[in-house]
Length: 232
Image 1 (cartoon, rainbow, N blue to C red):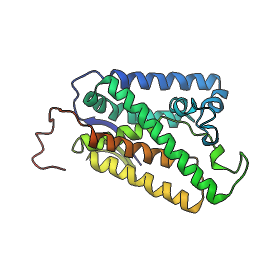
Image 2 (cartoon, rainbow, N blue to C red):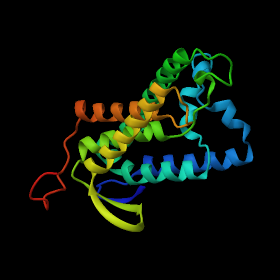
Image 3 (cartoon, rainbow, N blue to C red):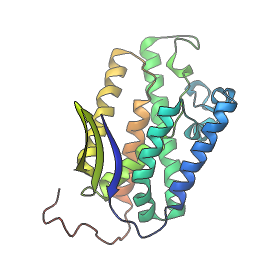
């Protein structure tokens, strides 16, 4: 297990949107603890996606537990500021929501495909009726954009393997391994018709959307990696 702690990648602007998103997600999670029924009301349920379209957005601000929100917010905190710095506050917020929508649509497609193969019926056996929550789809878009824009940035990573240690790895390696993990387990679940409760295809869809955005839409930016004599 590896958890990002911070990146060696300075910014030139205050990450207003990133910090605001973290605050809003935490505030909503506290509200969830007081009113657990809001999860059922606002989670993304593929079968209800077109009937209740607000779920495409509201699910991005809900989380399934303490570890879920802590993990997501760490990733958003570490990687969001640089992507926001690159695109600007308004564009970053718009792209964040767009990546979350693409992630939800990808999850919708995967759930429909799996339900078709299972030929399942009813809310308890059909993946189309399983609620999905979390900001991870949108944050996956942030990761995709970050890997394209800052592949050589160094990520200080807390590694849990026999012993606990801190190591620095290039962004392309850390995020690339994370994406391969999502691909492997996502397609494994799809082929074996198993449902783990993790929306791997939301992560895949969000990541691809973020990477594609960064490849197509770049802005001029100062180069911060002059101290590395060779590219990673």
